Image (cartoon, rainbow, N blue to C red):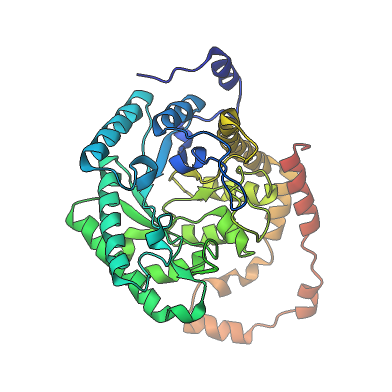
Length: 402
């Protein structure tokens, strides 16, 4: 069965050069389009959206995949019979509408049992239950064909610093991930694990708060080869960091297994705005980075519609995320084809090539040459780099006036 679109939408997408296509690998979470608009100061504003409806509508809009926490699909207290029925219906919808599940994860933050964390809780019974729940969720992800399994430590942290020894907490997190890696291996699952950092909220301080923290932690695990990262735009912005640079480090290390795209107004609470709705220049350079440096994974939108919206606003939001990504992809092509921009970049990265041989790696010969070389420091200090012009041209490309 193929997607059944309304004639109006089909015409709109057919005539839209930025319309999403399956090969774009755009995905959403059940929790993203299913977000009902509740916040700490107000209750739900939208009716519940069923997983089957989400699959149908996202397929209609051109999305490729749909992701989930275990309890986005199967209620926390579902019986085994209920669980199997729900999963069977969901798998049929995926097949009917040509959708896949690229990523799955576990909800270890919503139920009150996790109010002090899951893998790092001070209560050993809670830590054991978290392992049980995650194993069952990994089984579900494998059943649905997920290639990536994400770990977001939503409540792995502290409010009262005296409550936990942070060294002990790190060891508990390592023990849990080592256990679950081995569980996946023993069951023949080929999925990779992706760790998702976040600096704060809902805890006042979360363990492993940034890309750099998580990247360093990965190499202390028993199976670092199967563990990578799932960074999120808003999370690094909450720490006041440059997300593009963090993603570049993950890419260069071969550890960008998945990515969460959204937007954020500075270091505030996690806002999960529509991708590209706020930090336009940063979003442009992020898309440029992903498209030009070999990222082949899902472009996952971990965001949600404004609280002001009804269901139609949810689909406006979802289509907007995908169209904006494709707009930035086209802008990156314009940037690379702009003659003046490329001339400036060539000049900037040229320099005096007589020194190139001194930068090709360590050797005793190179050490001697470097020590004997005389540099014209004053002349080098006079150089202008034309970054003002380059940045202005970049803005003009993004704004569509070049």
